[in-house]
Image: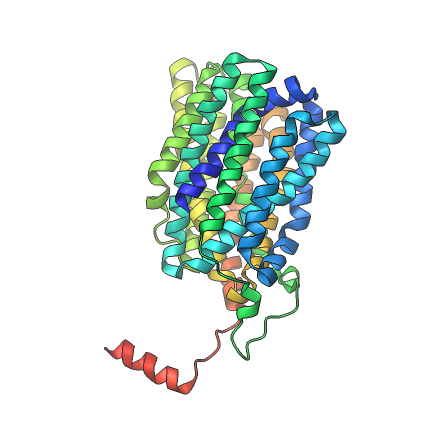
Length: 410
């Protein structure tokens, strides 16, 4: 699964790094039209997360996973032939659905295939691999950008399609797990379909973890704009900070994830993420008054703290999903835990950008920091609330209870 993650993320890295040039040079879109497609994609992902999870519970994860990867590869292969805005939006809608399927499927599969004590650590390895793949893909995209021709950008997108097609082959080689909804224990009620959407504790945890994931928006969007428009740091510093973040994620993600494999440990990791991200916001606002080398040093310090917040958020999110999702409805729960992140992706880019860049004087950073502190203070009680509401596991038959007791005594 780690090798699979490298392959798929390398494909996405190729496209993500060069996509602004592809959309403007090949498809002929305006920047505002590209933004419209991204917003529409986020909205579709929000609406489809839970239904896709329910489908996985009923029909098994692997078939949907393989099918989504194949369709994703096909859509990327067709991208260079997209006829303007309308075609672009159609492809973006299709990609949002299959991409959501893949994101949910890989998490459901990991949770189902691995014992609880290994889940967070395994996903940490996969996230390290994800950053390796993005780095390799970004380097490959740099070759296309160096040529800066329509043919080079088309080749870039077809390379992404080829990598995603290869990932579908790897999916097919993984052991099948079947449908979780058909494997509920005898006498254990699964609850009605979509009942997770009427579960306030789970939705609260989803919303709070989604808010905390806005640290990615700070790194990818707000910080580059802030550096370019509000500081005296040279623009190449942006690329240096991205590389620093990626390298740290590859090296330290597994180490930072220790202890996050229980509900309480995951909640603690999320609190550390909130406080770290808030501190990073305070460091970034200081760069209004710093000059030259001091500005760069403060930006590096802020990126280090922000990266720690990113890594602890990832670990805490995995731990929460592992601890609070019931095995027979795992897909539905994973889809519900994705809702907060999808909502954040729709709101945070606009809201946080306006706060940081349009308020003047940098006081908007203080509001952003306060939002993280508030979410961090609430996430622990929300996780504990959700854990108390979890259904008790079914009691084993008497003959099994005696066997288990003897094993524990030995």
